[in-house]
Every structure is written in C-alpha cells, then in structure tokens.
Image (cartoon, rainbow, N blue to C red):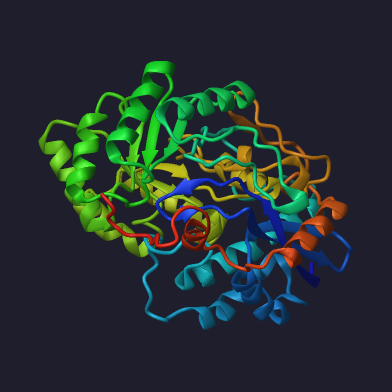
Amino acid sequence: MKIKDLRIHSIAIADPPLRSSYGLHAPYALRTIIELESEDGIIGINETYGGESPATALRAIRDKIIGANAFRITGTINPAMDKFKGNGLDRSQTFLVPGENPMDEATRTYAAIEVACLDLIGKSIGVPVCDLIGGRVRDKVPFSAYPFYKHAGGGGEGTDIRADEYGEALSPETLVAQVKQMIKKYGFTSVKFKAGVLDPEEEIETVKQMYQEFGPGVPLRIDPNSAWTVETSVKVGKALARELSGGGYLEDPTAGIDGMAAVRRQLVESGIHVPLASNVAVTSFKDLPATVAQDAVQIILCDHHYWGGMRQVQHLAKLAETFNIGLSMHSNSHLGVSLMAMAHVASATPHLTYACDTHYPWQSAEDEVVNGGRIAIKDGCVTIPEKPGLGVDLDYDQLARGKERYHQVPYKKRDDEAEMRRHVDPNWKRALPRW
C-alpha cells in the first residue's frame, strides 16, 4: 500500500493559564495534525507536538514518505532519522519541555509517522490499531484527574477568550474544589496533582486536604517536575507517606537519576516505600540500566509521542515488567486524536499498572478536530471503539479553524518561562531546584 501524500497541519488550541515548575501555560497550545493518504484514497491521521520545530522535522522526511509502503515504514524512514541523531545532547526532559528537546526529534518524528501509518493500515483492512499491534487486553483505558494550580481564565485571547470552567485555583481549598468538579464530570477514580509551584508546605497541605476529601480509595500522585532538592523531596515523601500510599506515587521530585535514587534510598531507610515515578529523569531506553541498578524509579510514565511510537512503548512495558517497574502514561496538552492513540497503545499493553495522565479535560470543544466532537471519558475511562484504525476522522472545518489560530498566534514554540515573565513576574526564571 503506497503513500501518495503527507499533509502536515500546524494548529493552535486554547489552553488555560496552568502552572508548573516550567512556568505558565500560554493562552494557546500548539499541535500538529498529520494526514497520510494512500494511493487508494484512504487517509490515516495522527496528532503530535506543535510549533515550527516538529513541523519542520516532518517536512524534512516528506520525500522519504511519499511513495513508501505503509507496511514497511520502519525500514523506510529509520535511515532518515539518522540526520536527527548524534548531537550529544541529553534526552532528559528536566530542563526542556516535551516537544522542544532536540534529542527527542528523531523518536517523536518517527512516532508521528508510525501512528499515522497504523491508522492508515487499520482503516485499509478494517482493524482497530490496538488489534494491529498485538490485540487489546482491555476495552476501557483508565485515566486520572489532572489538577493544576491555575490563574483565572480559560485560555484564548482577544475575541477568542474562552469560558473559565474551573476558575482560579491557587490554594489547597480551590484545588480540592477543582478535583471534585473533574471527578463529577468525568468519573475519575485517581488523581495526579501538578506541583512544584507553591511552597512545598502548601503543596503538602493540598494533598492532605485531597486525601481528607476523597479518602484512601482514590489514589493520589504528586508531580513537582524536579522543583525540589533531595532533602525537600525526602521531607515531602515523609510528610505524605500515608496520602501517597495505596496506589499513589511521588513523581520526579528532584532532578536526575542520581537524585531520584538518593530520595528513594533515604525514604526506604526511614521505612517509607512510596514509589517514585518519572517521565523526566527516564525518557529513553538508555536510561534504564542506571535506573534499575540504583532503584531510582519504580514507575515509568511512558509516552508514545517521544518514546518512539506505540511499539516502542510495548517494548518498554515488557522491560519494565521484567525489572518489576510499574508503568503509567505521560500527557501533554492535546486533542482527541492523541487521546485515542494513547488509549489504543494502552489497550494493547498488558503491563499498564497505573491510570494514564491526560490534559484532555483542560481543552475545549471549540478546538476539537475529531469529527463528531470530543471523545467521551466516562467513569474515568476511554472506551476503545470497534471502528478501524484509531476510530476517529478529522473535521476539516475545525482543522481549518485551528490552522487559522496558529497563523494568528505570534509564538511558534512552547515557552512557559516567557509567559510567567509576561503575566506573573518580569524577572521569573525557572530554577532547579527552587526549594
């Protein structure tokens, strides 16, 4: 099955002013939508990171894609990926937000094409993607609520300002209210809390109030994106030993595999066995030997967007299972195409031991490019449809609106530091560790 065209669409979607240790989300998040069309006129689609850098990388291999056999895409484009490799930079996401790390360029570009090919193949032969890559082991994929500290506002600018569904949340009480609202709407049964924003004592209190509100039956996870020293990380781990037990975890409290290992060692020596998770210190297969040797990370948050595609996530899962490491899934601001891709690979990955992250509740229906509107999340889960491929198609009117937004947005890359300086503190700079 030959590919006759590759179309790359850069779009912008409204994003609320969410906070993390990276800074502040801009009014728009950038995404890239891909179409692969076969000589039979069938179209496979995918969604990946946005902005000029990811789109340029895709355009650079377009000539390799056109005329290629979708069933043989691995052999076709692997050599083309070599041009993105070998610049000696760290794969870690510690200092660079996902999608803006030069060393991820090869894996995220390959993943973008791989998923679109799988969707194309699935639609051509009438098979869902999860069944193409080994077969589903679950029809419903669980996701977590993903609360953030946030400023007032729903995203967008000018005449495109969006309603603020969740309101400002910069205190423990308002964070709890935000989570209650998410659980009521989507039925989530676990909570992943983005921290690294306020003083650790206030973030500890936030988790304690969540635990008091929801009880031990709702696992809690906290992720400060490496904002803390080893000492502060250990202090937080001790203070939240009860609240993070029973399916919870402490994610990337400090920077690097060595730092994570030091936190783990000191907590275990204190009799605390809350697992540490990572999508920052551990982002590639080369990170695994040191991670295993030092017992630095007990849960890996995979992401097919930058791990190199769906089948690489399955390889990672088997290695994680071999070394008794748990597996969850990382998320970024995204629309329904990415959500369905995440759900399909999770469906076909037996060793998925924790509910996946998703930013999807933060995005709005006005931006959804999936035909028929937003993907349903019910009882905290996305149900895998019996439709072929990813089970979704594009709404081209909505895609055109997203492209128009992209051309109007002045920035073409994610820069949370700049947004913090623009709206919160003109002298703000990300510092690791901050506490």
